Length: 116
Image (cartoon, rainbow, N blue to C red; front, side, top):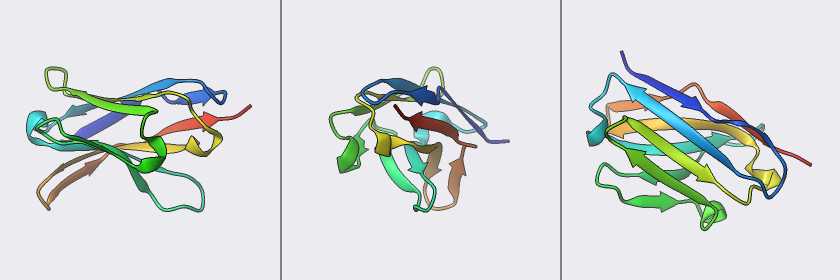
C-alpha cells in the first residue's frame, strides 16, 4: 500500500518560513520523481517544485529563490523549505510521487496559511 504523508503545514505571517515534509512508504522511493503541488480555493492545482530521481530540481517562477525542494532517499522523505512566505502562498500543499505514466500517487495535503 502506497502512502504519502505530508506534515509541517501551519499558519505563519508574511515573510515567515515553514518546512514541509512528505514521508513515503510502499514505493521504491529512490526511483520516483517527487514533487510538491498546491491548490488554493478557485484555482487549479499547480506544481510548485519537483525533484527527479536523479536530484534535478525545478520550480514554478513565483517561488524561485524562496523555496527549496530536497530529498533524503535514506529516509524516503522529501522536503520543501519555504522562506519569505507571501499571502499568495496560502494553499493546500500536496506531495506527489511519479514513475512513468501509471505510477502516480498523491498525499492527503497539508494546509499552509500566510496571513497578517
